[in-house]
Length: 121
Length: 107
Image 1 (cartoon, rainbow over the protein chains, first blue to last red):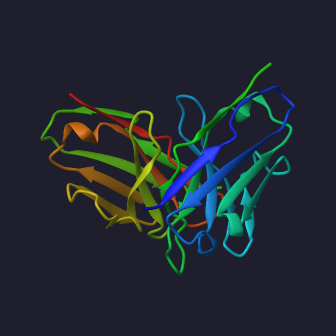
Image 2 (cartoon, rainbow over the protein chains, first blue to last red; image 1 turned 120 degrees about the vertical axis):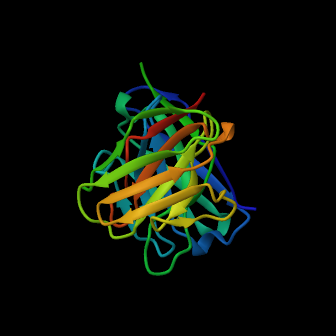
């Protein structure tokens, strides 16, 4: 069974940094593209970042230059380094796996339960 | 960026009823459209990919349709457990974008 567990969420002051982690199990992590998606309290879903199995990365404009996605295939782990945080970054952050679909389609077929990041003074 | 617009934002229906949620993309996304269900306090769950392909384990009362810029999610014979929020997502290009969501209330 696919299992994704996020950790690292916390209360942080504006301008601060935080590193989120996602531990994956139940599948061959190195074969799958991964994503971070966030959801501000009471709001909708916002895609944040993507990393392919081969290391290609993409970021939402709202986080570009401040957030860095990375992965450790040996540890089946995905990370998100978040710097220069603002109140607008307050959200639950989900780790999500891209569906295994050769030829396209960035659908997210497995999600963790999320970790809450609160940016406030 | 491709903007995804869902309607309605909220719908209330009774057990056994049918509802249809619409999702429009600001640019064509072919059939690269997914639907997600999110129950309160839970992570989203992928229901439908490729506009109309039901994911494993999803009841057949869920059906997706459309292509290009206009998509629908229809839920027939509503059940109490269908309550929650539904989001469409274009899966064609980055940045990936979601609709603002439709909240379904079961009376």
